[in-house]
Image 1: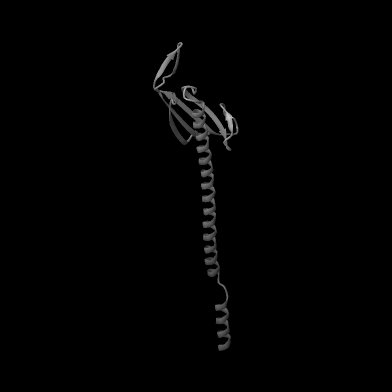
Image 2 (image 1 turned 90 degrees about the horizontal axis):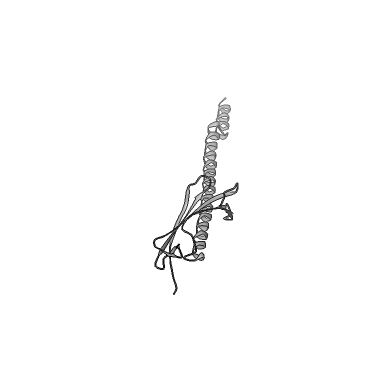
Length: 153
């Protein structure tokens, strides 16, 4: 009889209990949930970086467009242009692929009148502000500005 009791105790010690299985499962679940949270976080960060990168590129293109047009040629006022997710110009009217709204504002501090028409004065400073918003949410992503002065002789 003593031998049977001894074997039974050894057999009980060697087996895996429900508590062991439950603890191992909990550890595995915690590891899997942590990994899924990390993957989700990295995917969201990548998406935000892509949106930010495209917004900065669109703003840069808008500022360079104003600069390349020359000091007196860009009209005062506000213009709206729209771009898609790949920074391709959609036009001045949004459509279903529009992702970015670019608001370009130009103003001049001094004018001169030539033949009855106002022109920027030779010693004027033109302020250009470019703001890129997410479309259609209209949240600001980038705001960029520059000053233009007349150069040359």
